[in-house]
Image (cartoon, rainbow, N blue to C red):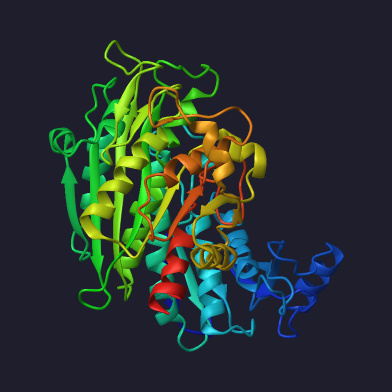
Length: 487
């Protein structure tokens, strides 16, 4: 979606034009016919509410929309403004209109608030229709440009920062949406590397042989049933103080998960193309912070594998040795994400000695049972880190809910023949998965695990996304960097 800033007053023939309206705050400058029509339709300016009408201007009929931004003093003001922008795009995305003008001259917004409207409008316009060759004309996206008029001073500079965030969210959505025959470990690396060209991010890739020499038996055990070789994608951004220890972000990148020998049910298995949502979020996040030149040192690692059930696949009951030297009895080959993460986390700690480690993974179905599709779960060994991430989630809209960690859960993953099992009992499944990962975090290292299983894919449109990939994870990580690392 192209964003253009235009001058006011607008030409009489400009159509459609959208105005952002606060709750119960129809501006006196609006055409009275439009105002009366909005009132008759019970439009009250609630966040995301939209009314459309036509007005006559110098003999021309102009299509005009009013988008609700909610209560001006609400705590979730930014989210409400994004909803207003998103509602405008949703209205016109397949309307036959190629451009819409958002007139902010009478909205009373700050530059940051105006940028939030634009961000919502752009994010809601992302679609992935490249494989849809027979889409009916009235369902095809026609909207390509959003023009911003009457923006307050400083909006363009504020938008430059948010545009970088939008770039990252859109890359994540793209990676998550693509089918597994298009995005697999090698092609994931290729696509992300190309997107990062010229950004200042240093990219390094470890292949199967290199990981084998390092002793990554847990990650490689997951990959051994697939003809697609695994990769470890490393991205480094040094925008902070020279020599300062980086913060590490690790993403689970299972580009397709059949469950392996512990085969998943056929119904719904197609959804497992998004089991690389953690890696997708980390990649998009790196693009976002690089595009806006974040003043922080960050390293990101994506453990990329495909989990398939061929004759070479690992079996339930196999014992693998992780890079840390700890051994794992693989009880269920469908609990593979933690096996990928444990080696990636071990590697990044040994290589970079990071100030903190944060991992993201579509790890457990149990998390969806616990939180549905409203929050991701967070587990942490550090209250300060957890608090900062939860706050970043609230500020960004990528919400998190904290779960407990306790030695009492550790006994549930003790193995009679190895250091641990890769699964515990049915109860507390998300917690025992986090307990497993925690065993690979070095003593004294602040760590947080984000289980985002319920958040990366949506079966219905949301605040700033259509059905499908949401781009979850990029925004919470970016906000965390802004508030806690850049300060």
